[in-house]
Image (cartoon, rainbow, N blue to C red; front, side, top):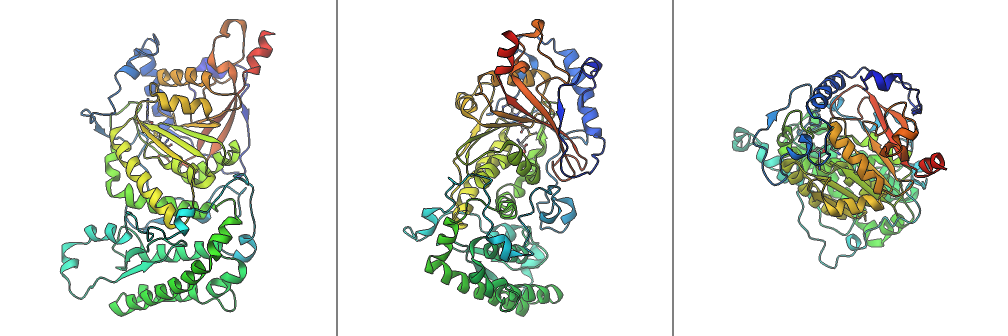
Length: 506
Ligand SMILES: C[S@@+](CC[C@H](N)C(=O)[O-])C[C@H]1O[C@@H](n2cnc3c(N)ncnc32)[C@H](O)[C@@H]1O
């Protein structure tokens, strides 16, 4: 990443921490391209006054549509490889079972009986998981959300719609709360959302997370478990024979599932069980975030490819397995504050609010990303209510984080700040470095490019350098961790530590 020989020659103070999986990251051709482009940018800009630097002042306004936008080239960070269609190419996306993180083995569905009882302390025991609103039917549990059936319908080809042998088979799925049911269209194999697959996945997560061993027995138990087996059986026959009557069979299996889960909801069992938990397994977090993304972002995902080439607004995403490890490494807890600077469509902000339950802030200036972030936030709120989960507060600000007051106030309170600055200009990274001076001690700054030059040491001549108050560690990410490359790379966690400078000055 660092091509500058001056930096390479300096003695190393950056500690390298071995990540758990011994996969060797591939070289990053895209990074070489970024680096070359950055060298040109640095040569062009004169590193003069920060605020008037071309990279900042020429940035397009968040309120205007980027007229000079270009389609991204393969040398740029790319829009996630998430397919807006059903999971027909699962190898393109990180699968739940393929996580590189061998530190967390708590999310397998294979042995629910043992795993279900395991209460982890990851997010802190202060977290209240149950959403009281979701379990009270005061307003009839009705609210606006994007039903899976609504996503499916517009994609169906006119010919298929005209084909009278294909009738709609709409099923309604009960979630683990007093909320309304979600409508799914059972057309198999043609849809943006894999309705059948998603319903079974939801049923398994609900069984694992919301039920005690005894309650789960009729769903998944070795001897009596029937409810989920019936769903899987109906799915398998529907796959072989995609007819109307097989769809009706699947619908019947869903109805049986609904009846069984409804009884437990009415008993108060699910709410009680949630009160005995403090965290959510990553699989459940990923499932909810995928549901939100599929409904709010995927239909319009192409709009994220429109940005000014070579600008700070090049788009790419950190994916949930890496974000999960970042939460682990920074030890963020539910009573803390998380900030994502340049938050795109808000994925990481939502993951923090859901998985950790903390107050979670994002700031994004690209208009298309802001529009999708707003849609995600709305759907996220609705979906968490469906699942009966209380999340941390979500704040998504549509503005420039170098000038926006609320986000800078949040930075001062933040415990963890993420900045996916892989392709930020050196001027923007320098501006950020100055903003970090206002962060509180012990705040963790997670970035793709280090804010501390490799080999940096405090000397009498660089006493004013903002890097002097950061203690940085280099870590590695792997295949499936980011949207723009299949290879791995480096990322950094810097801890704000004013004492380093104080010690030097003493
Ligand atoms: C690489 S994307 C990262 C998205 C998200 N944080 C993630 O990691 O999944 C970086 C984002 O930062 C945004 N950005 C760049 N400069 C910004 C600024 N000054 N204020 C707000 N957003 C900015 C870009 O528009 C882009 O969407």
